[in-house]
Image (cartoon, rainbow, N blue to C red; front, side, top):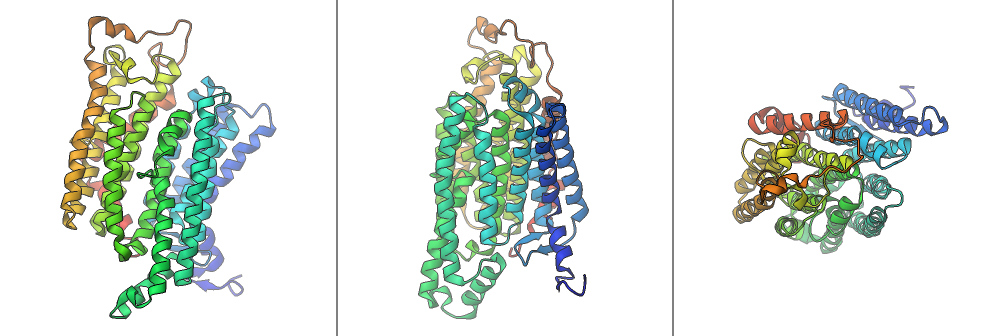
Amino acid sequence: MHNIMPSIYGLNFLEQSILSIIPEVVIIIFAFMVLFLTFFEKLAKGKNSYYLSLIGIGFSILYVFMLSGRNLIGFYGSVVFNGYEVFLFIAILLSGFFAVLISKDYIENFDIPYPEYYSLILFGISAMMFLVSSNNLIMVFISLEFMSICAYILTGYIKGSTRSTEAALKYFILGAFASGFLLFGSVFIYAAVGHLNLYAIHTYLENISYGSPNGLSRLTGISEYLSAGLLLFLVGLAFKMSLFPFHAWTPDAYDGAPTPVTTFMATGIKVAAFAIFLRIYSLIYNFNIINFNDILWLLAVLSMTFGNIAALLSSNIKRLLAYSSIAQAGYILIGIIGGGLYGYSGTLFYLLSYIFMTAGAFVIVIIFENSDLISLDIKKYTGLGYKRPFIAAAMSFFLLSLAGIPVTSGFMGKFYVFSSAIKSGYNWLVFIALLNSAFAAYYYIKIIVKMYMPDNEDSVNSCVIAEGKNYGIINGSIGDGLLITILICLFFTLLMGIYPQIFINFANYSAASLWRI
């Protein structure tokens, strides 16, 4: 076999290609195994598919650690695996782990088919991992579509729910337009440089930029096609990153989807979208053709400002967190604009911390829904701190982290990305971001005030338990999966806030694996 297959990059071509996608393949195998349970009535129970999904994610994490330290390039450069993928694979697998862990009680209450639901979660995880490791424009498009299809189906997964169906339809229609922009952008980029491989495009642009005194202006046709392609490609990725003004799907999809799916979209999809954008930015956009940094600067400011204003006006907790995620996307983008090892590692650190604080906040929302204790209306949170002190305290901590209060991971994430932008000279951008952070703290603290400072004595009794209900937290108990997720998220949100060096070192190692720093 070694004599037949070409030997490239140190290993046999076939060996290296297979090794480079083992974590994704493991997830896909378990997704099919979960789906296969539907053929057996006795096995097609929630617990079987639930535990099988968790085992699959565990095996994938194990393979990621086993392959860490390797630098693998597979399928003629279409897929790569190095320290960058190790960090982001773990982040995506954690978001998938949380999504599965918090789904068991939820899907039982809403009568959602088990195996199909869990298999779609696993397929979505594998698509995100393929997207992160993609090094080819076609591979990026295919992975993004694979991930999107899973998200469309999961968004409308609650049968008979008009809100869920409407959210899925809006998400699908807007997503189709975004995919068109992404595909046309790839076509223009290919027409300009004649390559689909991201490293090859980078090398081509580097030779033009530094190989001649006039740089890209020497070839006007290339500059025009490339600029148009990068603009269209940016629109497609901005849709997935929930950047203003490409955010329209976010509040409706987050509100209408099952809350575990909302958690999955808010964490996994956002991390995967920012991860591939960071790779492409470091390879192509970093040449700053037609001042792309100024465009990103404007997108970051608009996303932060709009997201915070819309969140302030929201009375629905899921929609508030959706608009908050738009603002958070603006903060994360600042680290990419800042650039360099410090900016990129700060972005990765922020993405990891964002998973824990966002997943934790949505878990509290799920507890409310499961118990039918209170509605999603923020006004109904009045007096919750007296009725359920642990849940209220956990929710308060996650909200404070999202606001960027010290001793939380959210504060350290903002510190790193803002510092990188200041080092690169983007002082006004950081100033606007600080104003937005102070403004955002108001609507986060407003929820905490509702929970701990009731308007009158009778409002403590506003958390009325529906008669006849016997699940969720009504009897003072929380489902195992929900409790484990809350404790993990609390632990890491606090640890990353008071001792971030372990995680920033990991992020530095990951960022250093990018092609160009």
